[in-house]
Image (cartoon, rainbow, N blue to C red):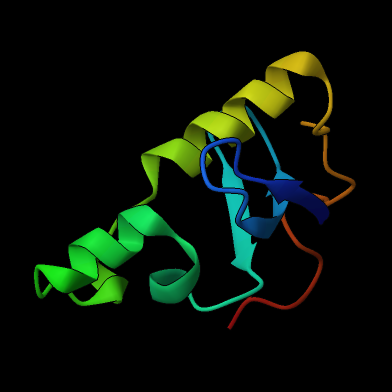
Length: 85
């Protein structure tokens, strides 16, 4: 995963881009306290697990991918090796 900062608020997250449409994000801090968009939704009473995304962060990730700052290819193999049960 690569560290990336939101261009809107500066919040830092870890990101892995498996394809143009598949992105994995790991927050480094509580989303409601570190992201203004999540904080606004939480203030309205929305539980953070039901907030689909921060549009500013998503735009920052897409922009980084287009500029080549964020790698789109992942070394992850498909399917993930292992036993299906």
